[in-house]
Image: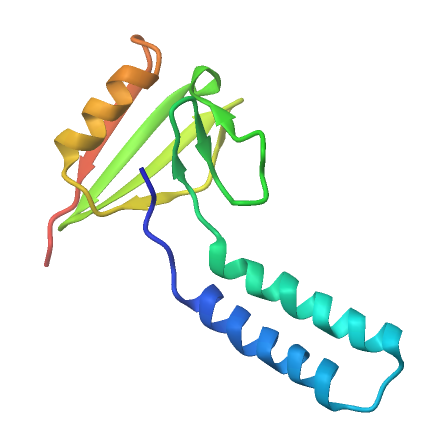
Length: 131
């Protein structure tokens, strides 16, 4: 279940990636400098494949984290609902984790979480009124 992504890092990654790729290919440099610019552009393009969300056995907070956060490590989940958007905050080790944003029905998210998290895990639901 993928979380909603922000488009700003994708746009910045594409623009900077194209700039470094252009510099690497079209400017007179040593081979080492050209390769550094090309590899830098590849790194910046990798922000386009950034994904986070809920997997079968863990929460994935970014695409570079292979370990993720196990559902058994969670202490509390807070779901904040505003319109069609659900913001999920989780707590572990007494600290709040990153916020995940979903555009799915609440019952679908709760059904998914009910199968994954511990039965005694506290799940708070906050409904925000639209003004």
